[in-house]
Length: 504
Ligand SMILES: NC(=O)C1=CN([C@@H]2O[C@H](COP(=O)(O)OP(=O)(O)OC[C@H]3O[C@@H](n4cnc5c(N)ncnc54)[C@H](OP(=O)(O)O)[C@@H]3O)[C@@H](O)[C@H]2O)[C@@H](O)CC1
Ligand SMILES: Nc1ncnc2c1ncn2[C@@H]1O[C@H](COP(=O)(O)OP(=O)(O)O)[C@@H](O)[C@H]1O
Ligand SMILES: [K+]
Image (cartoon, rainbow, N blue to C red; front, side):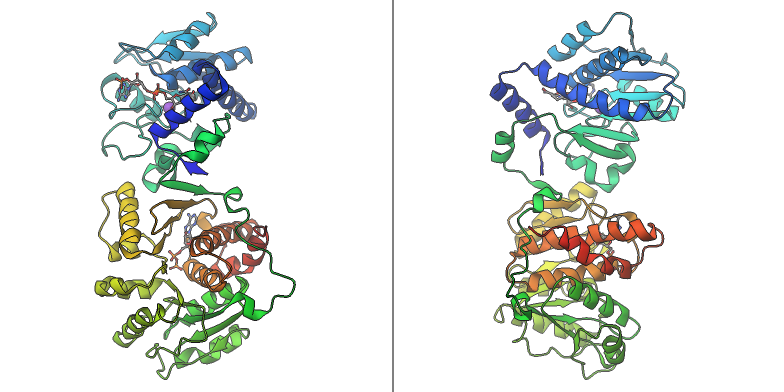
């Protein structure tokens, strides 16, 4: 799914209105009915005492007024509160006029805000994509009042006070919604950790925005769901053999961290690799041969950490980093690998300690071969770049980093973001907080290594499929283990089922 900016969303609304020959208030009616149906499905589970709908002067307020009408006609006790303004949008005015006179509709006044019980349902229709500046004055006062009320807040399109595509000043007022319900496509604001306390849980409802317009619009950000991946993961051909799916080399493990190598190796095998060879220090030999008999062990001469790069000829892809340590001789192995990868046509996956080595030897970044895939979590990413002011800045750093080094970079998190050399970012939709446990990242590295070794997949598709399948495997595992009980090895067990769902 594409993630549109605020301007593009407005343009999509206009394109739909034009293409279908409808009025803008008819499109608003679709949005308002979709929201009302969604809300009534939820409220029917509770006993709604009061529904307070707070409306701003623009089309977000227009949505709120239309929602008030739908809820009133369905028998809910609705009260509407209007934010006074110098001007109101035409569709606000249309829906103000359509509001049945029995619905109590009151202008908000400073210092005389209505009392809202903690049991009340609040619909936040103050501001949406048209927010042009941080909230101040009465609008800010209303927002603080709602946040203090402890009522359950449902935001239409955006929690009021939050910009669609940019950070707001840290002290400015923003609605803290339990749920945010948008239309057709997700917004960037929904996906960032710094907005989690405002957005709450989110959902988007279809309103039939013009598909041709969306198709023809270039965007900076995509949201990756199952439909987005259709056709990207081919079936294994009937006469395929282990050579068809590539031979991968994994350089991982050091004294006390051989488990990381084991997890990555098992993930790589379950990720469908043809053959896997693991380079570990001697201390890892027995562990690896016992825990992962399907992998070949190519033991380093040193006991505790990897010191020598093996011959790269047999391999289609190499993964380096899990549990590797940062000894100087290990750094030297990474340095040689980077320099030789391009001429050996080797796809690279770089993680964990290999990223930390890059962080302390930044000159090595100039040696990254084309299409290298890096998998930092935010702290590792900071070591490669600089501290980010906020989540939006971090995404810009990601975009710049990938363009400068012509690489793919997986910025891991709840909505993992894949940066690409071409510019667009891809946000993943799978995964759960149970995956915040040691070794989850090693599993991702192993899986990505398998997919990069599969010559049938482009670097972009391998990365998108791997990130998505990793999260999905975590979700399938959590159904059995619960989130707290989930450990990295459980993710490995569900890689197969997660990939099987993607075959098309
Ligand atoms: N178009 C369509 O067909 C559809 C649109 N839809 C809905 O429309 C929403 C977008 O509506 P919108 O563009 O009217 O903007 P909205 O968020 O209501 O705010 C604009 C108003 O607020 C004002 N204002 C801004 N900042 C302010 C501030 N800090 N403090 C005070 N005032 C401030 C601003 O005034 P101004 O900036 O001109 O001073 C203007 O009056 C979208 O989120 C979705 O819910 C859906 O129904 C689907 C179909
Ligand atoms: N709340 C969450 N929602 C979805 N995925 C998560 C969440 N927390 C962690 N993950 C995933 O788990 C993995 C953790 O990786 P990482 O931080 O490198 O762990 P480790 O170094 O312990 O292996 C990442 O792929 C990340 O996206
Ligand atoms: K809102």
